[in-house]
Image (cartoon, rainbow, N blue to C red; front, top):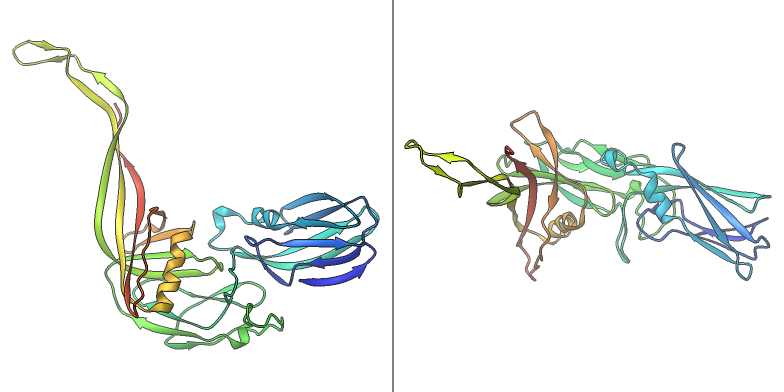
Length: 306
């Protein structure tokens, strides 16, 4: 966190980059005001938070406000943004900016670090790199992807500057399978071509039973004949990434907690279709190479209704 002393008191506030789903605090100590108002804005939307001072100290967590600034319907295209924050006691204002990333980082993890990317050449994909201001989607090339304009933030281990980033692309000419993209916990777009396994179809009934006035060809009437008003089916697809190494497995695990997963329809004009992960337990073995297996739920299929 950054710190500054001003007319409000001693203020500790977020770094130049923060994650919207990590706690993001502003702490004001030695404050003589009764309450403070904090306004979080991206130029299009803004949220105000009022906190009371206790023993000349107040703490406000702006993480929920940061989350609400993002548009969930266009989150694939905009996963980071510049945010302005104003802290006021009614007489004076302290303002700062930060880059908010739609993601979360765990203790010990490194953001924007060097990595190897599997380049599925028969499918549309890019390489995500953070340049210090926003995510950039770079077309993959064989070998090392050149980095973007370096940024000078001194975040040592956790925030790796783009000038030091090396992304190595390894070509993969596979053409058959299920191609998915998703947003990982660090806000990056990830891609993988999975092998298709068993498709499970579970049907269920809906509505009510309708009694039919059935009359056979002999003129006999039967009142016990019924039809169900409608049926729908839930489709589950088993997927597998066989023989992946530890780095690839770590990346693939991020799909298990991603709320944004899209399936690519290669042979139609549909493009990307949203799907969701099936809730289950994923068991990881202690092996150099192993299979990564999981299930996705395809959109429900509804038929006619009586």
